Amino acid sequence: MKKIISGILALSMAISGSAVMASAATWQNVNQQSSNTNDVTLRWNPDASADGYRIYKWDQANKKYQGVKTVGGKWKSAVKLTGLSSGTSYRFVVKSYTYDKIGLGSNRIFWTPKSNAIVVSTAPGSTYITSNTRSSTDAVRVFWNKYNFKNLVDGESNSKFGGIAVKWFNKNSLKYEDVAYVSGGRTNVRLNGCLPGKKYTFKVAPYTINWVAGSSVKVMGTDSAEYSIKTKTYWAN
Picture 1 (cartoon, rainbow, N blue to C red):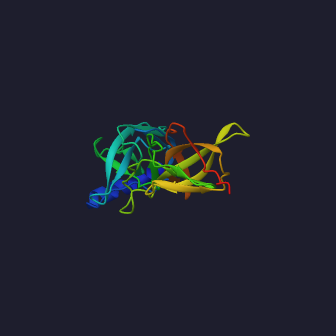
Picture 2: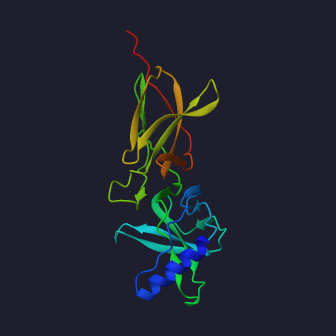
């Protein structure tokens, strides 16, 4: 019955020359499922009345959404978007569409409003610790090469959705543990609490950030090679 009523309303609007748009979608729960360096997978709750979906990507330069992919099938609930840049944040929305089924022609399409927007970031590549890394008796300052994150979501800093995770090797647990998360605009961090005359081993890894339903999720890149450094010792009197 709901579909019949919607069709009659659409027909009335078409006859009067008004713009036609399908009723608001109830499936609008778009979330990111997976992210690699050059592709992301979006998922959503399918719309039982739809004939297909179109995915739109935000064009920051022109300040508008542009269609990037159309998929058919009412029960379609996911799409993989390829050919993206690594370490880059994007914003997407989805619309479902229904073909005209009441005699106005099969080329007429009724669209739902845009879904919720989702910020999705591709995984970054790799980075490395540089030879600028140095130590004192009780601290190590770790340096790494600058990673060029890219923000295509808004006009703010390119490092808004990215940063560097610094890890050190714990000799007790025999595994690497995160000791600092640093904004993507920085290239070094001071790690205090070290002991004099001890060797410490570090790795760094870039990460990007997804925003889904107000919650952030880190997408980690590849760990760098290990870098070991010994802290200074006290001078004897």
